[in-house]
Image 1 (cartoon, rainbow, N blue to C red):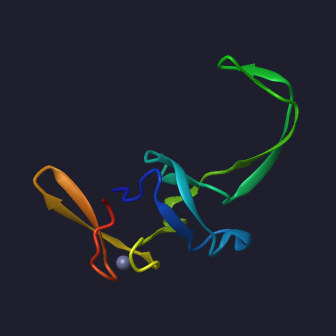
Image 2 (cartoon, rainbow, N blue to C red):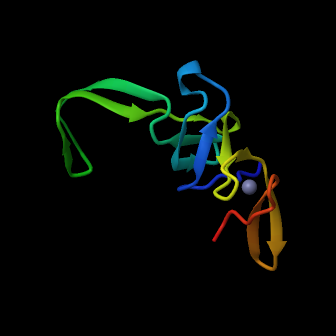
Length: 110
Ligand SMILES: [Zn+2]
């Protein structure tokens, strides 16, 4: 499966948990192998954190909130030009693959 969503993209949640539906946020992580993405402010989870030492960082104890991953089919890329969740077409020009909005034909990259 080709993943057309990249880190930094603005996406809208189109299905999944009710409280997340319609939310928009920036993609902060893409996991192409799992077909999942992590979107800022979407699928918030809480966990209790003990004082731990990880990769040289010290995490403070308490309740931390973090974004859980969601399936990539639950989100749609939001076109920066027409501001609508859209499917994208991929246009190849030489080695470059440019993504194009299927609503307004605008180039999504650059
Ligand atoms: Zn558009």
